Image (cartoon, rainbow, N blue to C red):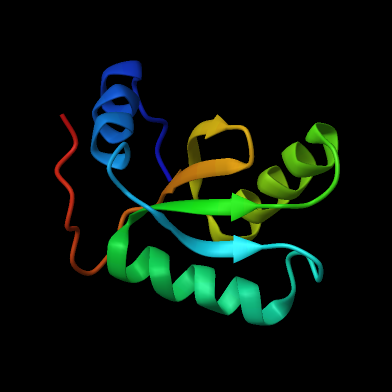
Length: 98
């Protein structure tokens, strides 16, 4: 995934503002079924919100970083327990970056 400029991230944050969380992670953490669902949703939506309801802030940060690395996504924004992730669909890109 190429590095995104601040202008591109700003554009994605604006698009993500109206989105609702699609994937929710809690008790079991980042399990294989959650990873599969995250992969599917990223292929379909490219930009999505993930609710991470686990432990303290440092645990959430670690989990979000692990999650982004595992699926090849970029963390666009994190507010509280909501993370906005982006990964372009290689076959059919849906979002045009500014």
